[in-house]
Image: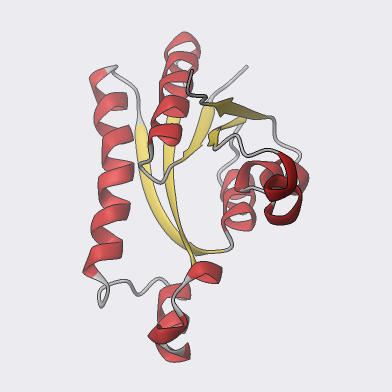
Length: 152
């Protein structure tokens, strides 16, 4: 049923919780895991300048080692855990609008399932801001498992 599972991650606690679910499903189906980090160019600091944001959109992250380090740490965590479980894993870093890049990556790589975290925002913030998970759900036809994390 599942041969390729996409796990978008930012390294947060919410994302790490989703990783647990994704790896459990991948182990059950002997599926390959794709760990994806999206550099959100819409949230980039205006102070960077248009030229630098354009470079980031084109995949040139060399001039921003802190961003590359954060991305490598997030996808590397998924890759390490997947490898420990004996799963095939691919790490990728892309830039753009997260929901579009997640949906596009899933389609381009024939993912059967997307497993991602949700910050669990509610009320007015959720309506006004939306969330990457909600936008991804509206952008793709691939099944999406949204893992919520709630503090008791």
